[in-house]
Length: 223
Image 1: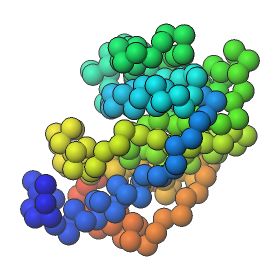
Image 2 (image 1 turned 90 degrees about the horizontal axis):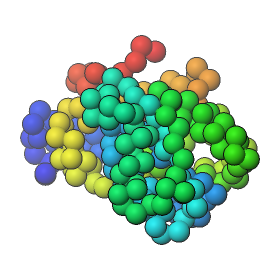
Image 3 (image 1 turned 90 degrees about the vertical axis):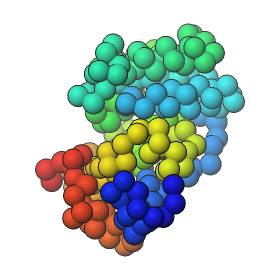
Image 4 (image 1 turned 45 degrees about the vertical axis):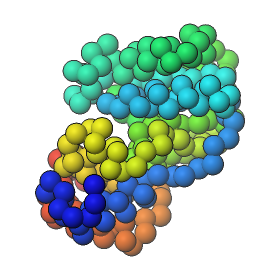
């Protein structure tokens, strides 16, 4: 995929989309953690990435968290965390290393319910690796920092270029809508007490405003 016309997303628009994509990636250096949290979503690549990181010896315990949302109920009818666990097992992660939190329906609940699950087993991690969709890294980090300030968080996702992610989803406009939806939440949620504030560069904010004006709005919330 080049910089020419792209199924309705033109060259200049695509440069703006890439700016938003790059902003969402935290680019944290990978390091060992006491526990990893695989955040449920429509993207089974989260479980793939988490399994790979487990096999690299980065953490001894992996919690998959997530029930269902309107966008995942058809794909994962028994719940996101349940399907993620099954995928990780198929990739060789031992059952004894996995916990499942099956009730959360948003990122805040992913964090709080996972923390409660671990505490019920007497586990109070100091370091946590958050594994998510690529474009969810920044929002999940901001949410976790707000709701679990005692822990130190780093982020990881399946290594992937924007073009490859679009090909995997198969719907260019939907991907752009999702990127903007997450960025809107990064902007708005600190004001609502859901996340810590993140600095947003001028070029990213400008890209967001231009793309929203161009109609990429299906995943925006009423702010």
